[in-house]
Length: 157
Picture (tube, helix red, strand yellow):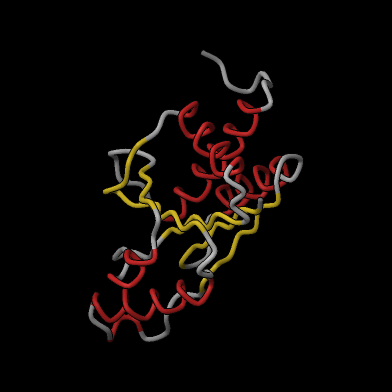
């Protein structure tokens, strides 16, 4: 299985970028993870929120295939404990899913077309985090999930 993290915009804060790189490096021992950054739209200030979501949505949809299991990181999504998330990852691997695409949207969220492509909605918290922070938090939780699956001592209860 392969995992994609599709993000709208770049991570600009150095400390977050270093955290992302660290977890991507750690994850390569368990699974192939690819981070795809979609450039922010040019002249977005002249566009409506719906137009921005539509244009970002088209680019997101171009990055996924019909065979992908698509999970939107969305505030309306289901929340999982770390152990539950690890079981979810294991279940998808057991089902023979070739690729899971986890997607973080832009500042205004996802277009209706992206929601229609999604197989699942996943929320990291009831709290709101910046889109740049969510990437690092997600990668850390993904790493934690694999250490749980391998019985390694990273996760304590």
